[in-house]
Length: 159
Image 1 (tube, rainbow, N blue to C red):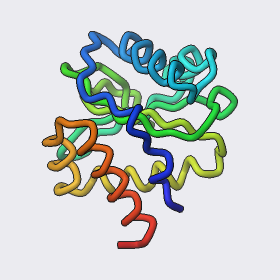
Image 2: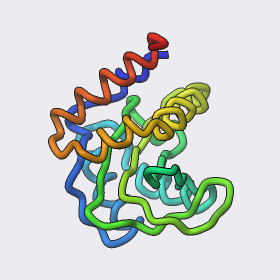
Image 3: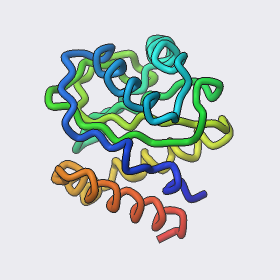
């Protein structure tokens, strides 16, 4: 499946500066809601889901978080690409051990059957040293948008 259609220029936030997870979720949820991608229930649903099922993942080159809420809180599919200036303490998926993440990919999924496939694409990409190095180096939202769209299109084409 081509997940590149979930990537939108107005949902790339590379200069967040939240002190903790809840403040980060609040800041990002406000922007995503203002852009019309989610309902007003999104922030609370995001926190509730993260408390119950943490989404932090540690890879050799990067620690990330893949927060998402249940589909009824999402108006249309999206992927918000977020970098926070300081590490945010989160819990690891499946282990509930603390980790510090500076990269977050907020996933807006309207069809829950697509969740596993999208998470698998992220798992593959975030284990790729070249992908992670380029992601870390990009500071410009337009460049990040092009990088993600091209990467996800290539992934869908099997390249």
